[in-house]
Image (tube, rainbow, N blue to C red; front, top):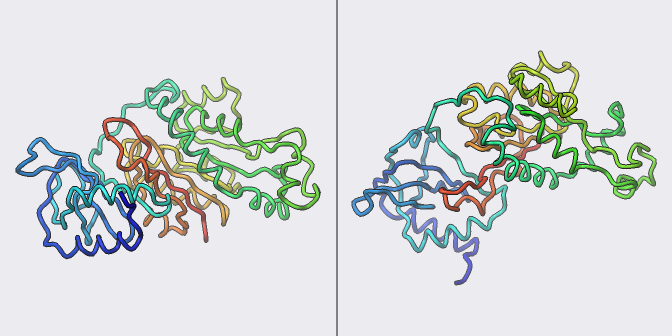
Length: 338
């Protein structure tokens, strides 16, 4: 089968838009946003499918408020997509870059979980360890930290030339452990990359961490666990009160929200407050990563409105995989521009 081109996509989208709208109902809907289009994904009901059928792309909706499809059993009007068109669109969108495709999940369940004991004793931890932490580290690997470090060293070498990282809602510090194992300079690496003949800083010798990592978590059991594992700089407190936990003059080059800004953890209003307070601690040009086991409260639109240039929105090839199995679908990478 011939792969769809960009021109093919836009022609098909216009063809679908010319169709009369139809009522679309189902158990739940997501939005797949790509190329100026909002496609509805979900478990769809009709006269022939009273038990519901999973449609990766069921219809196209131009004017849509996310509140229109919140909760369960939503009903909307959309331009229908045929099964053959759906197959072609799925193959095409799944192959696009991570900064082009966004999955927006409306809030369906407002229930919050019971209080956890230490995070690495929970059932969710296995998914973080196997899927989410590796995706965060892979995303970090795509950031040009070397040039950022050189800019830091020209003005501030108070941390010995390493970048500062903050893990918000860090649990027992397990992600920080993985980061410290992964991000090391080999001896002489910075000299080779910087082109300065080794004059920036001698601390790269004998392998040193690239990051000075800090973490905040509101669960005393997690703080105790981090101390047991000798993970330093893990602080107890509510991440919304970041200024009351960390020194006011401390700023970071990367802030990670791994699960903290997600459904079933905090509500949207608190997620926004946590994020807005945290990015005041982010250096201009610094990066944020947002992901987690449940769906993110914040969207690319939310990030852009708060001075973040959105560089990545999703893992496109995971968006259309079987919902009976776990796949990480949402991961945001952004850079602070002001």
